[in-house]
Length: 273
Image 1 (cartoon, rainbow, N blue to C red):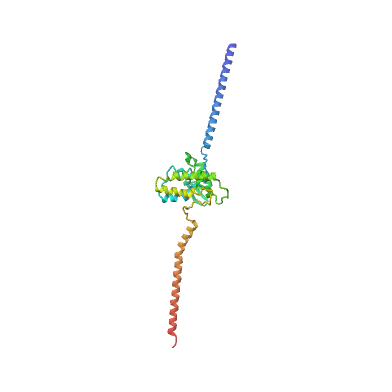
Image 2: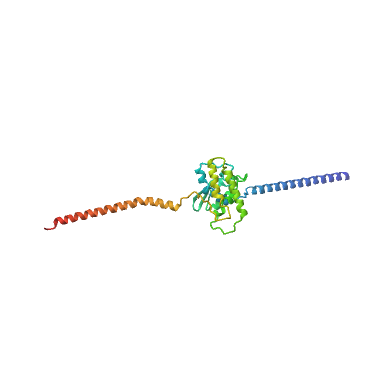
């Protein structure tokens, strides 16, 4: 009887030990799954972090569009895809092209048609909801070219008078020359050679600490003012009315003159001799 009780006790002890080991194993597995899940979520959470300034990239593209592209189009030149100024090498280009500016205080997302009161809020919407549409592969941050393209001078209308930094100027000048040579190889064609010289004159020669620098000396695309356009349309609408008023006035004046002459002639006929 004692042997039987001892055997049952040993069996119960072994069973209890197996259950504890199984429980600990399951707990460890759940913990590992939880940790891996948390790591995955953190990885996904930080996967869309892009270390590229949207604002400076926008400024760089505006400079390219205004001070370079009109001359490129005039030469009927196609910018090569390996050129960092090519639209495909702008990280935010697709999103920027999906901005719809409906009114002064109304912007719309071209992907989901959601509306916002300011462009800043639309930018935040792109970062939060449509970050998966960004092509983050390779070096495609247009903001990295801001030094060569004078973004700071365009973004800041009132630049503080700071002392010129020769090292920074030399670095930006070297970057600028590299863009000119990679985007407009002088041996490719006559138009590429002309554009290479133009780019150096338009962008690179201003990177200097000597003398008074002049940004974009060749000018750029001229935008028609909305006020000027409204005045022109209003003038075209009022001009026919003005001529009509002048014509009617002159006709009335002629009628008045003829009436006076007729009255004068009648008076002369009835005058006694």
